[in-house]
Length: 75
Image (cartoon, rainbow, N blue to C red; front, side, top):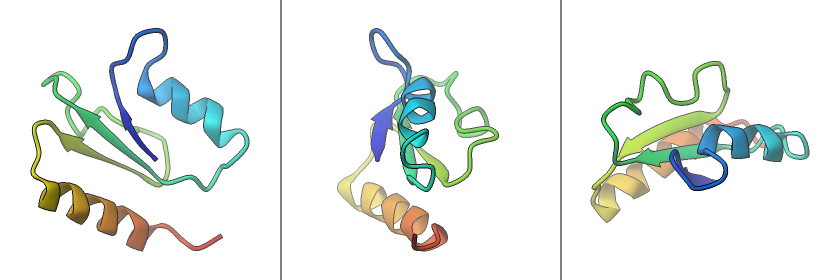
């Protein structure tokens, strides 16, 4: 799953917590354009997560997704 960190109504980490109740193995790529959402703060304590700062090139997105999927065990 790819989700932004800051969204109206619910932030990305809360969305992930809710979705993982049904799909605990779900890999997640957080994206954010805010410097306070540094990669050190995103997904702390959450397995199978990665982050990518906006703006990003399509090739950077593809690399981040490939890395995340390669690190995620098949269910």
